[in-house]
Image 1 (tube, helix red, strand yellow):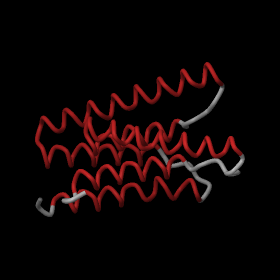
Image 2 (cartoon, helix red, strand yellow):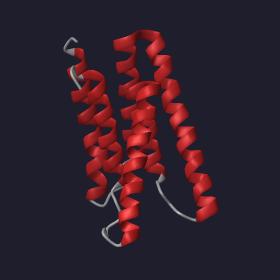
Image 3 (cartoon, helix red, strand yellow):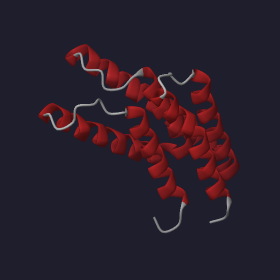
Image 4 (tube, rainbow, N blue to C red):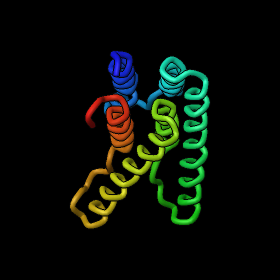
Length: 153
């Protein structure tokens, strides 16, 4: 692997930092941060894999947006539970552009598994605070991206 993968990961972390830190400071991340995250992911896909990778990254981002939005909407209509917010759904779909289709599926599985485990602990009374889903999603994005771009993982 050449150095491009390392720079790709470093850029991913730099772009994710404001999305994760702003909610801790009481602010909601603006939509342009999600656009920058998605645009950098699409640019990286184009530079590292050409047009086929760009098309797959677009499909991953749009597919994740549709699937996550639809699933959250159905869950909200049937159970009145609010698992993810709109910003977290946008973060999932923007992160998917960095990971491609297979990576996006892995990221969604990791993020949802973690959220459901924390929700089970919350229900049992072991955890009082609501989990920071944005940080969980960001960690899932970075974890899958590291597995894709670092040798030996």
